[in-house]
Image (tube, helix red, strand yellow):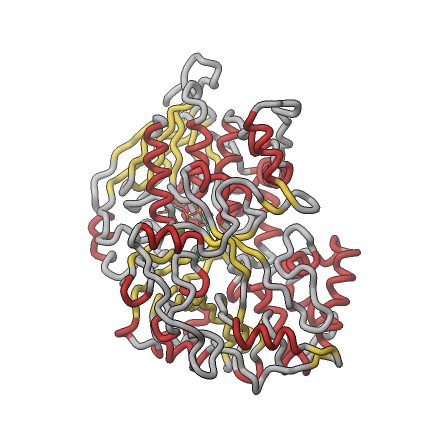
Length: 598
Ligand SMILES: Cc1cc2nc3c(=O)[nH]c(=O)nc-3n(C[C@H](O)[C@H](O)[C@H](O)COP(=O)(O)OP(=O)(O)OC[C@H]3O[C@@H](n4cnc5c(N)ncnc54)[C@H](O)[C@@H]3O)c2cc1C
């Protein structure tokens, strides 16, 4: 086995990063800042970098933009690391004010204007506000209890829990159909935390009436392709269509891995790995996956291994070399198989969601307070970006959907609703597939279908997985990265990659160290997942990087990112794309008759 010497100049550490998603790319990038210390190889079984984050082509003439981001759409101003990575590769996100649409007909409510359901549930709203207050004081007692249970403890009605409380949480963090079991703290933080709270401050009458400021991501395929080329220019070997089949042996001195080539599928974007029976192969990829199963394998030696793959894949890859603890912890992470159907079926949307201002459901007063202004705004400007439908047969189960045209920043502001692009996500095939209405989407209007193997943010994840990660890291030359280590968000994936690099001996970047919020988040992540506190290196630095970093953290706690990588102007990307001939001008004039959008 290869000898393992440390980065003291004697010999570079030979590191294999498995997975070129946000976590793996970030790990490789931060190691590549030290070409004297590391000899880095990144492999991914698919033929592109970005993992769950990628883009696809569109008919520009019809939809106004020539591409859309699949799955991963946007984040919050607290995503300092993600935005910094955009800036480092010459990309930027754009601001957006989030509009949501939850439920249908009598259960419909939104953060844009008040509807009858909120008037009906004023008592429950008061209970929810009380719950948040009490939880804020006694967080330690409630933090990890399942959300639904805590709502029930505060005597909220079943209807209110299903129609209001659960969708508010499911929206962020992609908790999907695991929402009733997510830790109650997630919703409490969303409403009461000035830093993380997307619904902060909560509204006494409407629960959520703020259109929370978010950022929409740039073209992910291009961003990751640029990042791939940058890594190569920094000496990193990036080998795509290359799969880690198993870890043959490992000890403190290094690892031996078995690797085989994969066949690239026609659109490169098949997220299935072929090794795990739990990962359903994308249509058209099944043959290639089957063929690849029998492809010849070969062994390679590395000093260190960073597994930036999902927890269940990591467990399978560790195979015989997995310790009892690794099997227990990694095996406790639960995943579900979800599908995103990208389509243009506006009739499906009209049948299952509320897309326009509805005067018959809107209310002009809430608990005697005048709501005319919000209604006037809604009449002219309600353009939901994010939808949640509760299934009539089982209201605790959800379907989620994006109006990609309203949300993503490369689209024109005005496109006839009938030409919008929608992404409907059907959750947890094995358990909830019988509730799905996917068959109702007109197949001639389907642009594509993508399967995801998604982390369930059940409270058990925060009892059985997250607190134990620190005891798995760096044991017998293996470290773990990926968003699943805490919460399924791009920002967490990026931080997890930096943490792996730092733990191997890389430095946390000077500019980010001086961005007090980014640095705090990183330190907390490193403490939680590695059990170590990162010591400052650039406390009194007066360098340009340090000065720049200091100016990035704004707001009460420095949470609001104001550095490069985010523009000030909404749909800035649209304007840039028009200049490049990749987006069109507006495809409609004003709103269509009787609707709040074209
Ligand atoms: C539908 C959807 C919507 C989302 N929306 C958002 C959003 O709006 N905002 C947000 O912040 N986050 C969002 N997320 C979450 C975010 O996309 C992820 O948290 C993040 O991209 C995960 O990055 P990762 O590097 O941890 O994992 P991944 O991106 O999953 O990367 C893992 C990589 O490992 C590779 N791999 C697996 N096994 C092997 C093997 N044996 N050998 C070689 N390579 C292997 C895979 O091919 C993959 O490329 C969304 C996720 C989904 C699915």
